Image (cartoon, rainbow, N blue to C red; front, side):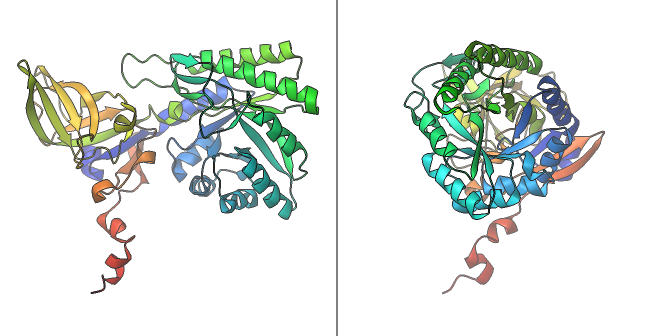
Amino acid sequence: MKSLAATYETPLFVLDEQDFRDRARAYTNAYADCDVYYASKAFLSTRVAQWAHEEGLRIDVASGGELAVALRGGVPARDILFHGNNKSVAEIERAIDAGVGRIVLDSFEEIERVAVAARARGIVQPVFVRITVGVEAHTHEFIATAHEDQKFGLSISSGAAEEAVQRILELPSLRLLGVHSHIGSQIFDAAGFEVAASRAVALLAKLGVEFGFVAEELNLGGGMGIAYVSEDDPLQVTDMADQIRAVVSQACEASGIPLPRLAVEPGRSIVGPVGITVYEVGTVKPVEIGNGHVRTYVSVDGGMSDNIRTALYDAEYTVTLASRESTAPAMLARVVGKHCESGDVVIRDAWLPSDLMPGDLLAVAATGAYCRSMSSQYNYIPRPAVVSTRDGESAVVLRRETEQDLLSLDPGAIQGVPS
């Protein structure tokens, strides 16, 4: 760790390439007769896109930028699925021109936009309809009603999903493959997926009766969780896969409809555990918090610009001293960043050695997902580098931003501010 920090500076994201490949392969094996899309919003670069493709994953993207990176990384367009609740006409046209395999339609406006763009190019575009099934799932809990008040998808209960299907079937430039559902994130068991799958299959059965539609595919989205702290206990990939496939099969059999090809979209569960963030300690400040108790504020050289999840979601992480061994007693610490915000917290409560000092390195585990991808330049702090390691060798995945990168976006800095 000290060698990587010395070579690439801190803060630093480090990805274990072999671990990524192993986790990707675990999904392709567990869902051998299904389509597995890597949810690139978790973290994407051309190198990561290449790893995913080489291990048999498809890719889902949610913007023109993610599409460009996936294509540049060598992912065949036919293996790309395009998400998003408000795709621009330019993004839709770019996706169709590239030949993306599937576009997920999220509104009535998008049905028309994609149909017009496809018709103008003389092609038939394969599409999904994103549906809301009235299920919200997080960790071990799920709620099966009244969760359709959201920006994504078209509601089953209101009839919007059926209307969307009817409109698509009337448009010759669109080919409806099936429906898409996504119920939440950081999900530890299959209960929510089971309810969602049952409701999606019931919809497909109804569509068959009303419109003669036979779905070729059923996409149940992602959201599979990972362990951030020792108390987290997500279901193993193979167990989750077996349970999801069984409930889809049983639901289709009970409804009397053909079994569609299943698709899932893991992101966090592939890239999350393979990444760590390395910080250097800058200050160590004991603070009296009452009743004789002390919390020590440990300030590091990054913070909410490279990990916003604690501030947004009260996310929890595991942290350890990474640059040396210590036998000192543990102290209650709060790991905080260097930004001008009191909410700039990386880890709210951690036990770290009481001899912690400036210059020590801390490693925060399971930061491969939604940290670099949600990062910012707040306080004009350049974003950290991302490096990969494999077989004792390291390589740059994304280089560290520089102050020159920041200034390059400012016409006043480039041309000189007029007097």
